[in-house]
Image (cartoon, rainbow, N blue to C red; front, side, top):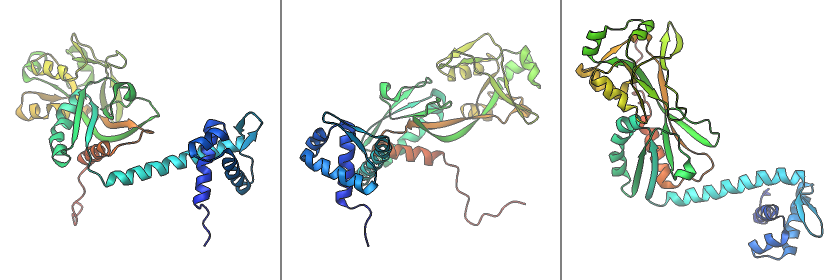
Length: 314
């Protein structure tokens, strides 16, 4: 059985890519440890096989034709995939080790991610983790991070965003505050209340509160005399001390609600959430130490699998 791609053909494709990138058969030959004539013959065989001219040649320069540019883009991507596949197979034979740098937003980091990391370290004791707690969007290259988790992924096509969870929102206050100012029962009642505000770091704007009114999603601008920036947990601390109403994530205040220190209000208008996603550069090679943390976090937030043999409730 004939093979469409034998070793000489693959070698010719690699030489073609070298020549395309250098715009020189001589430089490509030096990189490959061959003579320029050998490079020229290999590319000639490739052109004959394809039935097109890949290079426009002059006595001083070689440059890609339109067909050559299109073919180069596909060949370079294929060679990069082969290189990554070899690297990944090699890494599977090694133990994950090294440092992973991850940026976490303060509330999600404190309440959902940091409690998981000791278990990760038990599984991968040779992987060290540097955690940066901050709510601003990061530059992966400039800031030197491998991963980030954000509630509002930046509109960057160069990033992969893997959603971990939809975090439910609630509006809460202390019993003493509600006794003093009354309990709101409609969205319009918020106008008469002290609504604690959070300033979004990326825009400097106050975050609107999210509700669902008769099946319609609503964004509502609220007002209050105290605003926090930098750390969402500051608003919750204010609410715990009677500072007013706050809309926050349920996972932050679930213990307070269970103990009666805070009370949820406006439940008929609830049901909204915000997603938290794991972010990393799309085109960057992911070392084993980073990959094992990605898999661990994705698995940790995955919904539990249905039990075998479980019967549907009718």
